[in-house]
Length: 431
Image 1: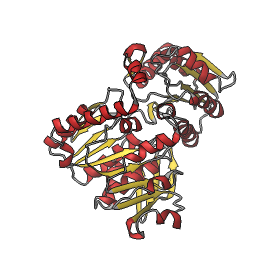
Image 2: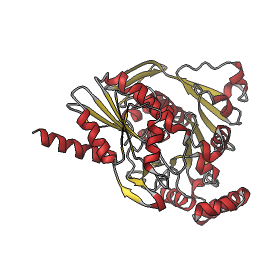
Image 3: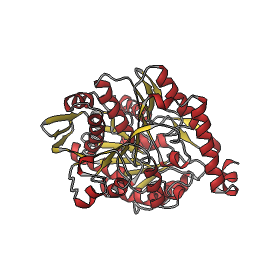
Image 4: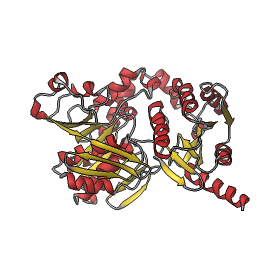
C-alpha cells in the first residue's frame, strides 16, 4: 500500500511531507543537536568503520561521545545493536537518540548519513558541525534515478556545514570541494592534488592535507605513518587506511594531537560484520558486509593479499526489493574472477523471487557457481568444501540480525552465528 501511494503522490508533496516531519521531530525534542558537536559521515563504503574510528579518537581525548551507525547505537558506555535495518533512522527516532545523548552529557555525536536519508530530509534540523566524505561508487542508482542524482544527494550534507573532511584520492573529490566551507581537511595516500583542486577552496590556508605513507599490510593488521607518527590498525584491508585518515582528520580538526589519534585507533579492535573472522583453524571463515562491487572486490583482494589462501570459497547473493538490479551480474563476475569455489544464495529478497535474484547473480559467473536457495545450507556447503589453508568468505549481510522477506516479514538471522554453528557440527561429525 505504501509503495502504491508513492506512485500516485507527486514528488514535491512527498518531499514536503518528509521536510515537515523532520521539523516536527526536531521541535518535539527541542532541537537537541544544538547542544552537541555533530559529525556526519557519508559515502558509499566505510561509513560505519569511520564512525567507530572517530568515536574512539574522541573518547581517547576524554570526550563523552554518542555514535549511531548501521551496526549499533552507542551513548557513552551504553550500546545496543541497530536492528532497524535502516542505517539512518527516522526523524523522531534519531532526534530522540540525540536528546538522550544530551541528557547523558555527551559533547559529540557521530552518525552515518545516507543518500536515502538525505532524500527524505532526515538530516534536516540537525546542526552538523562537520561532514565527512569517504568515497563514492554506483549504489542506489535506481532509487535516485542515476549516479549524478545519487552524488548530488550525498553532497547536500555538506551545505551549510562549516567543516568538511574529504577523501582527495576519490575521483569525486572535486565535486565535493566545490561546496564552500570555513575549513576543509583533505586526506589520502596518493594526494595528487593540484592547482585546480586548491582553487576550489577559498584559499590555500583553508585546506589542510593529511597523508599516509610507508603503508604495510599483513594478516596482523596495518601499519602506516602520518608525518612522524606511526599508526597501527588491528584491522585487515588496506582500504582501512583511508577510513583511519578520515577519522584522524576529524581528530586534528578538533585540536586532538596525532599521538591521541594513534591511541584511539589502536582501541578499534574490529568492527562487527566487517572482515570479521569467525573461524581460524583449520581454515578461516570470514564474514563481511560488502554488497557493492567496489567493496566486494576490495574484500577479495584483501583476503588474497593477507592470507594467500589455497582456495577462496565465496558465499554471496544480492538484495531484492528492486534494488540496483544492474549490479547482480557484476557481483557474480567478481566472484568468478577471485574465487575458486562460488556459492550463490538468498540474501534479502524482500518482495522479489529469491531464486530469480540468485539466477541473475549466477549469470555473471558463467556456469561456475552452485546455486543454493537456503542460506544456511549454502554456508554449510561452503564449510564442507574447505580444507586447511583455505578461506571461506560469506558476504552481503555482515552482522545484520534478520533476513527481509515479502510483506515486511523478517526472519532472525546472523551469518556469524550460523557459520559457527555449522562449523561446530562439521567438526563434531569428523570427531
